[in-house]
Image (tube, rainbow over all chains, first blue to last red; front, side):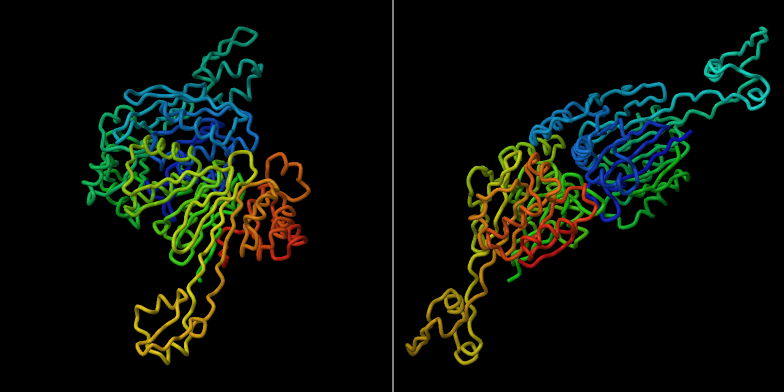
Length: 303
Length: 303
């Protein structure tokens, strides 16, 4: 299945020439979702060839500027381009007040429905549940109320085997039922057990996004066995004291979470502008969890 | 004298690949000022090699997003880089409320004094007056309260003539007085009339910035004879109806203002994203006012 994450911004609080502030674009089949929206995200979408109008869900992890200063600009540009379809926005309650205030300042009445879904940050909450996926919050440990998000694909349909499809003429309405797991009974009453006429679907995948957090073991059960984990790694162990003071993680801590949660792959990002080069961060993480990659602006990952 | 304007963003409401939203950096000797601050301005400053910490005055013309969405990010980055010197911010009262709200959301207490100077938009107001320059608002005609700004250099000091400096030994404390226009009387009582020992200073220059406005003749006396005028030109005459409806100007209207105000040079910008190419806008303006140039991101102009 098509399930990708594109890093639009891999930097931390201060944007650098190479690293914009945080934003991840997640595409799961025809669902397009944005996780956080630092300043310049709309330009990054354009630069990476994505249509901003296809985004239907935006999740904001917390209200530090490098995670949301680009949101009002994106909302405004969607409006100026004549959007009419709904946009769903998820964040803490204060975010809605801020957006309303900013729209009122410019006298803007959006041409499209902006539907706000507030969440609390103490407990995990299921905040989106449709026929294709779920999104659940991951309470993190940061200086302000903060949640990550885990996006889980729902179990895909079984695949009808080619042999069966070739040899037995199945009326169209039955296809979906067979893919959902039912046996097929033809007009003559012959039963074709589902297991014999279908193949296992590909496994349902999941992507966990942990934006800004100190080392925080309570997240482990929430992200257990996920296919791809993004975990911030603002510092290396040489600046562990800074990490503690600012409720951020080191690369080694991010990797330790990945290891303990048994994830398949880890991507680290949100590197402090004090590191000119992220190689040290990568090495530190890989020493604990080898299947680690570095976030880079424009990097596209398969979940 | 060093008096330059660097266009950091020349686009209109919707940023394009080539044109960021509006921001102009003005440098007058050692004064560094920013006029408007669209999304991405801090990245544009970096890209063009300017230190954001040298900016001491930021003027926001109005609260449409393409003129201020980058402000909070810039303020925040100055803080993160450890700024301690004062920053002066000029805008309508609501801007302060918004900044305070955003800072409170992230729990940020700025490390530097952010001094807010509110202005009203009905009448021209002198909002900055120091030993080097004045800044006065230019009430414009837009959909929300909007002011442009005119930055006027104060008359520079007279220049002491080379011959005099070579032949007469003037004690250091007298230099400034001579440059300010006083005669010099030496120890023996001989009078050197100022006009004979100094040269005319270069003329004091002025830069007028008219951000977003319909064609509005009341601005003409306020910008009369200025050296450089920036006037928005969102549309050409082919979309004059759009210009009227949105309280914007056409290129011909911008040029007409420049002509009637007898300015020395006109720079037009804020082109609608609907024009792929600005050549038509330039031609339309030059037909009325030949000394017109196009704003481009990164363009640096001498006032």
